[in-house]
Image (cartoon, rainbow, N blue to C red; front, side, top):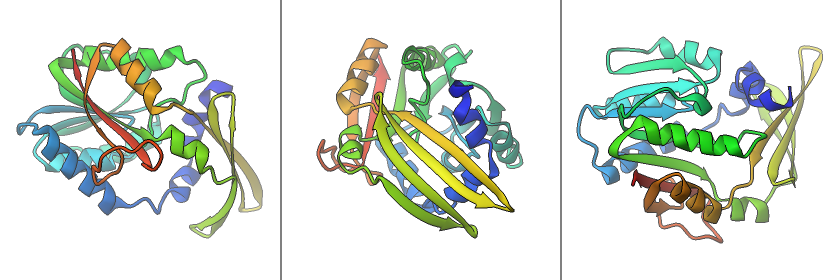
Length: 243
């Protein structure tokens, strides 16, 4: 169904091919800076929500934390699980149906892993689940694109070659979503995938978080944790505390 584009695309080998150039070093530096700012004691319980193949979970665990990564994609969790050890575990699951009760010191949701759903009320389900999962005074780190800048600087068409495959990508904003069409041919077959992410502006995130019982304590605009500037920042990163 329409609703499940993310389940099929994120589970596809081509998803990982297209995004294989993601900057691991940048991700690592971001996580290290982030945990320096939130001053989490060793062996704090961390939930990595929509963890993919676990690249951030590994870094967080290396900082001395106890990490659980959760993701909807069976193949990603299968891959991540190969690297499990006592303080780093992975489990398949849907971020809208979290079943934890005050178990975590910090929940992180990184690299635009939010706003996939057709139904906007699903965002509240995610936030309510996060709030329930956190201990009193626990922290929630949400990292999303800066909707204002994305809309202003949208690259309508581009072609990328990754792993010998040419991906033709077109983007548009429609019905409050950024829609990315990804087309390519491989092994004699034509493929078409779509990514749809809600175009959520910083102001809306702030309201959503407040309404779900969070208090924002930090906002940043880059992975180097520079101050957030509405017109120019690529990211909108919030750290909020359960009220």
